[in-house]
Image (tube, rainbow, N blue to C red; front, side, top):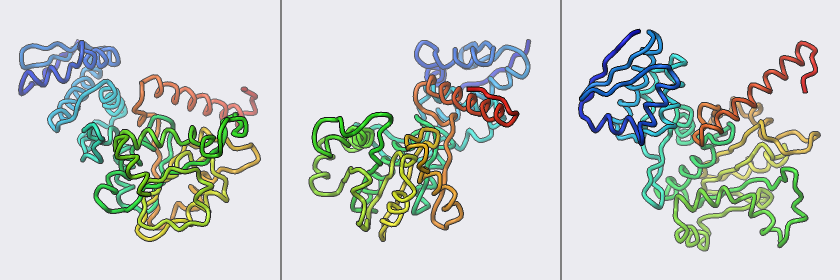
Length: 329
């Protein structure tokens, strides 16, 4: 057995580090197979050699986040553990970043993973940013936060949020109401993000003034969008023609974020995804960045991360079987 000691500057650090009912420390102990004991202003990490080293690196990484004002929760702990186990503990110092936006309730919005940080930086530096990744990686949420921040700083005059109204196995025609009523459910995630950032009253005020527009992609045709922050969500469900139409709407002083998950395409099998084509066509165009988020950037419940990984593993196994001439279904 090996033992290493970590000194604490004050007891408050231990309280914040351990979390509610010692949840954070128990996660580290369970994942690495070590014991972590608090002795006054010291922590002792006890276990096998490599596991102890990883435990020390994880705790020190979390303490460095605490020293920069970050709040430690189970998602932080699991992400730091992943970095340490993948030999990337030296990158932990890059995690604490600037506040992107403050919600209507005063909650600061920051990048929670290195992938999210690169994504936010890309949005700031480029005219068009493609954010590709699985569910739960914050693609849309962070894009809306960046849009609200730009609007508050008067960098743009309008926020335009759009997405294609493509059915995931359902038919729009059977839904009640007019066209707007039919497409509103598809736009709900965008409404929810705006409500959180601005508050319901401010959202409706800006909507009435024309500063905010939430509309299906078809409504973008024939327009030129100047001085706007434009977000195209669920872009994997655009056709090639829709994507080209959308990209040619960009006007002076505008910024565009295109988000999508190329593993969840709801288009008919004979229709190519506009997002997948755009990723190939635009990869070397100046002013356009592509950011790929992965399962390690998932910031929802840990089960979502496990589901994403399980599907990734399944698809890889299928490809390997096909390459070998097998027939896994």
